[in-house]
Image (cartoon, rainbow, N blue to C red; front, side, top):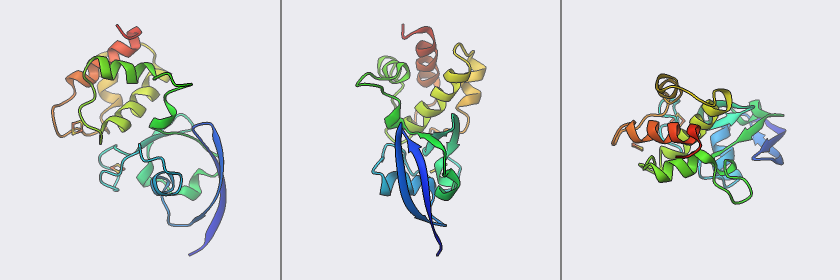
Length: 156
Ligand code: FES
Ligand code: FES
């Protein structure tokens, strides 16, 4: 298997690493860089548990080869908090009981952050549309949507 030297930025840190052609970004993040906040739910592009931002766009990391991210800027759930301060979404998810399970929440937070970055005051349809790739099999989306709305309002 061919290997490639790649350089990418992950949560603001430059990473130089050697990857084989078939390793996914999800594997690189979890197994090489120890960023296990990004979850492996289906490894098939179906569940959204592995959502990360690549150059600002939410993407399923299980469907991207690490070699494709050479030169890219990656943000994982670990990169949402800044200087020990939770992202407004993380705080709102705690406040509004949007944290339903540890498996889906990281991907939901990353998708919601991408939404608020491009649309700071989304309506309910926009929120649902932004989260349609993040599957929840437990209690549904009511609390999650409320939490995203609250974060957009500034947390109240
Ligand atoms: S683990 Fe990537 S979409 Fe499910
Ligand atoms: S939030 Fe994970 S299954 Fe519902």
